[in-house]
Length: 181
Ligand SMILES: NC(=O)c1ccc[n+]([C@@H]2O[C@H](COP(=O)([O-])OP(=O)(O)OC[C@H]3O[C@@H](n4cnc5c(N)ncnc54)[C@H](OP(=O)(O)O)[C@@H]3O)[C@@H](O)[C@H]2O)c1
Picture 1 (cartoon, rainbow, N blue to C red):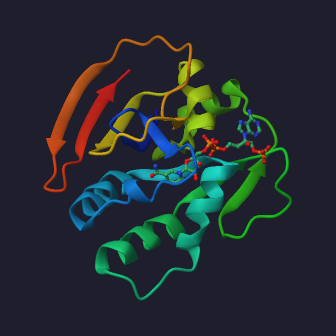
Picture 2 (tube, rainbow, N blue to C red; picture 1 turned 135 degrees about the vertical axis):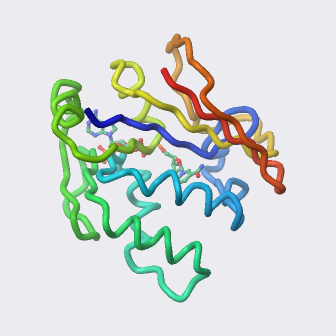
């Protein structure tokens, strides 16, 4: 049985993008990025909200960056991607298909049959997976910024008791929290 894993980089007050839609303050440095890469190595398929996909698809064509960025780009290109969208007409990456609706039963079947773990990204989409009880593990990277509002990493009206599996602090002030739901 594959795990469904929700990972997000957020401000200390829990936003993945600020009120202007910016998230440059969340960019991981080399140390954090290398750690993220090692987590992503276990993931065979990404479920992505359309907004997250539109940001992440840049990794399809990025090259001549640092070794850690190149490593991430290779992980991205090797993974299967399912983009959830009612509006997107075409994808701009290989190994990618569009789904028009998020169906919890289909995700449950995917978890039962997948050989490798499944990642979910984009807080609106991940929020639906959390509310449906499909998420097995949550990785939150809290950065040392308070942005005062924006797009929350976790959905409203969700109550969940979590078990802390691991934590880590990074030199740039980011804290990683790894929970099992
Ligand atoms: N903090 C970071 O490290 C980081 C990194 C990358 C991006 N970001 C930012 O994080 C934010 C994520 O935004 P988000 O939470 O709004 O986006 P999201 O979950 O990535 O995407 C939302 C979109 O996904 C589609 N969708 C959601 N539920 C669906 C369903 N049940 N059926 C079909 N389609 C569905 C819809 O696309 P359609 O409108 O096409 O129907 C919806 O507008 C963005 O602002 C992004 O720029 C942050």
